Image (cartoon, rainbow, N blue to C red):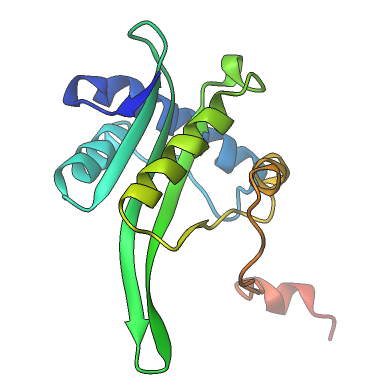
Amino acid sequence: MIRKARPQDNKQVAELFKQLHRYHCKIAPHKHIMPRENFFSERISQAEADGNSVILVNDDNNSINAYALFRIIETGAEEKPPRKVCFIDCISVEESTRRKGIGKKLFEGVKAYAREAGCNAVQLSVDAENKDAREFYKKMGLLPRSIILARDIQTEAEQTPN
């Protein structure tokens, strides 16, 4: 069952967050490192308390096996029309329960919440190295809207021949 997270879910959500981050460290170690142990529960507590973020969870008989953290952002400028966007910070599904439709159910819950909030779009950012996530979001109908290009220059002098 998809529902809003409750304070007592914090420990399970933080554990899923840590599991997701550990995966990011594995696939993109040049961009991610493991922080101190309390980091994950602190971030989830901050998200719950900030008033702007929403956490939805998949509750399987009082066991949280997936969550989505997102926020509603209103944008607009003189040269752009006003928009209300649901920005997904992360979606995580417990490793042992992946590929069972839970992520899709959770994403549908986020979309439903966004529609009720009057959003024009759902968007997110995903690491280029995260092929599984990119494929999942493609199946959910998300398309690239912008692309960030980067070049690591820290060790560039070492890589450039003289």
